Image 1 (tube, helix red, strand yellow):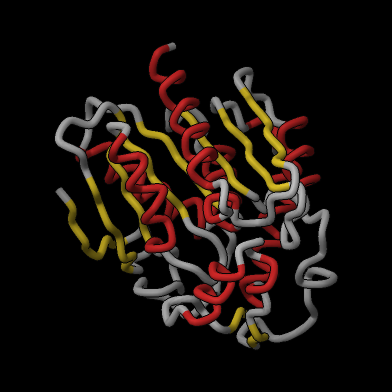
Image 2 (tube, helix red, strand yellow):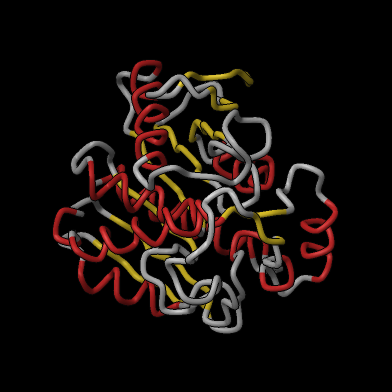
Length: 270
């Protein structure tokens, strides 16, 4: 069963979402995408999760793809975890008897990390991939940027997303991938990272932290620092040699999907 719909978030902004459920789900996973991309780029991961018996919800973050809001713009970093909370609340309301897990990539990794920090104890576990949880690699240069919030710069992330040239080409030609990024978004994320760094002990969720060693956009050091500082008693860190930013799209992606599913299965068994 699948369903696409618009969900009103905490401030009325409508988020485009998709729900895919197997015949009998053992748990539900909410996937949160990264900067400038959209939920469809997680079709392959969704397929594997469905095969493994997990229901999957996804949404386009505000200002991205089919969701409402000024393009790639955040007024305040809290919009990210609070939109996530809207979706978590929906998932729980529709699946009251099932555990809920989060998977967030890159900026979506920031979203789920900040959600876990702001709303501890809300979900059964959190998986991050190439998550922006610190700012060890200054991808946007020195932050905050002294420029108007509504000024935009070209999205130059494409080259660093993956070692597979086909994935890079598809990303650059994808009409739903945003082509510009606002200064407001960059500065909101900077504020969010500063807040995240100041409150690591609020994060207590069981967590699986994944990162490619050759990530050209978000330094693996971000995940090492996040792992070291959070208060989770059940936490696992995996750094993949030779893999780039989008580990879920690398040629070895099926092996990584298997690792995620194995971790989820182990969480359910505990």
